[in-house]
View (cartoon, rainbow, N blue to C red):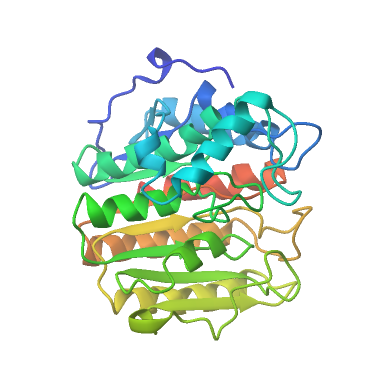
Length: 334
């Protein structure tokens, strides 16, 4: 989808009744994070979503605005990632070719810059929410939850969610934040990045790791050291649908509520919907509508409405469209 800053200058001050102002990051730069040669994570998976988003934003009955993707600086990425790893990605990006991990995450010329947009757009959303520019924010190309501090993994180069969590705790001096993940795959990069941090509350429901990458996220993993009990992993068996998801998610919401975090991050991967080529769950977009509505209500209840959503996985374009439009509308209170 070709976009320009001007075409999306629709006004962040728009407000309809008691509905919430929502910012969504999308533009030409969003298409840069796209792996070559038929890789499942490529920019064709968001084409339908981008078209629906544009139509929705241009309607008169929405309070949603498109913001231009932002590029992170190196110091933003090293909030979470080790400097040596960042340098490795930069060098590989200049050469092109090969892999950034053991074989899931290809390198290509420009992958470093493309990855900076995933981080920068999420951090821009964090800034806008914290400064009251918007009530809530959605970065569809974010949610790259498999990247570890020192390495890539599972199609993820830089972990924008983890960078934003570090930013929220360090620079915005929040005491506790919550990270909720509904991607079909366990958010191992975030989980293990903050496994011993009691200030990061994690609720993650996903397909059971015995059947799906990365093979982690068992119910017994609840945090380490002083953070024991601040994490909740809720694995679901293959074939689980909306009913099983809603039961698990409502338990996650109650879990998060108990800690009263000051900010909620939502990773809303669309790969749990029936028909995704890489997973075995059977959700419909009702799962994403339910999750967003529940967290939207919770955010207004406990943390001044502060919620930031990030896209994550999803490899069936129609599923991506329906799930992420449900998220966009849910953030606005529709």
